[in-house]
Length: 304
Image (cartoon, rainbow, N blue to C red; front, side, top):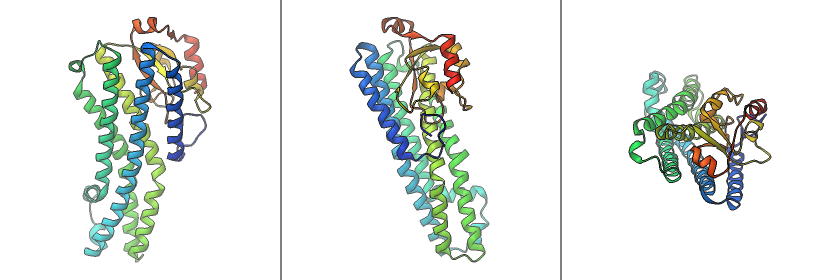
């Protein structure tokens, strides 16, 4: 699902990437009409969206490569050992085989892309807010956020999907389905799970970026956030009501995107292309930004 209402989570990644590209184009158009600090902030958000877009593309390639290698390595293993050997493996043993057989590559790529997004966001905050220094950043907390996001993607979604598909292939072989036929079916099952997995990957990468932003804001003692992003035909009503408004922590807690996801780290929900930018009182005044009212918060919630 892209940043619009009523869309399913199985929307093709190509469509999501196209939406991201459109978001970047609109932000560039916004930046051309801006000056000073607000222009710098918009350009920083463009860099963050570009980092997320690159991460999505890299993860799509990594997952596809990992699944091809899982099938190839399982097929090779079955030529050396009986299907019963694999069928009797414990979950942890089968997991180790799957990770060593290809899925570990996707885990490594996810962590790498998280690192790139984190680096971009830290550079943005350090450039746009001179009250924060590298020494003030809670590195341990940032690392914990990365681990938690990776666990949420792989432990909760990708690993269970993959193990289930491998088990089904082994069960088929145990009842005399030819190995080549079972491997073809395994490839198809792994491919079918790609849409949901990539939606989860994209969501967690975006949530991770916002979580890092929130942590840096806490480190800097900031509690005001400007909602930034595109205002186009696929923008949710929730997001449309908040774009270019400044929200404080109390108002943030009253926001509800209608998807059961925390607004501070998920914005408008799954695959939202908008983000929160920590700002100071001085920045709000200098850029003549508008503070959100109770009516704005209610309008956003009604549009969720």
